[in-house]
Image (cartoon, rainbow, N blue to C red; front, side, top):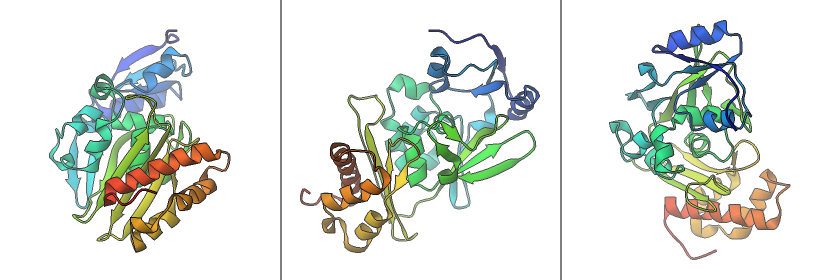
Length: 280
């Protein structure tokens, strides 16, 4: 199928795009890399009467340190993060995440802001941003507001964005040298969305212990008891039954086979962060 008819607008300034969207009263969608919205248009799952292209807005294409955060512009591509084009992201966990998103052709075009705005439950950036405790900077024609990632995604494909707002940046806390990160996902084949995924962050300096499961039916979900147990007693204190029991609380409708798949994603992400131990 092909997209339903729409009018195309190219904006060179973010404020121009936002003012145009406000005047169109909910009849417009913003587009940059087109790797999330494009397929939705072609399947006619989304039928906006206007498309506003913000890919040339320079305000959305910077990466910089701001005090204790790394501010990543919404139009930064997955490939730019993967390649370490911007110094603040070199050696950062975001590089590992970006490198496993879809295929290189998709990473060349797709943007971090577009992926988060799309809010696919299986998307890499949705899970990673939640695990890293990111904040989402949202811009309208009149104001800028900041929303924690755990409050930004409300449900599958549903976010806190209003029709006349865009994500302008994602703010990631700077990690200490003690931070340990792990990210793992199961895919049927390379490049596909995850069947099960998990991201973990342990930072003794910041007193952070977080285990977050993705590729659920809605928003990613934390396993606080697993995180606390590992932080307190180490990975060797954990077994598969502990993880499966914890998963039952966040996926009551999944059968044991599904929970075992997710449990192994959790275990492998923990090993990536903390080092391998004897098999569970």
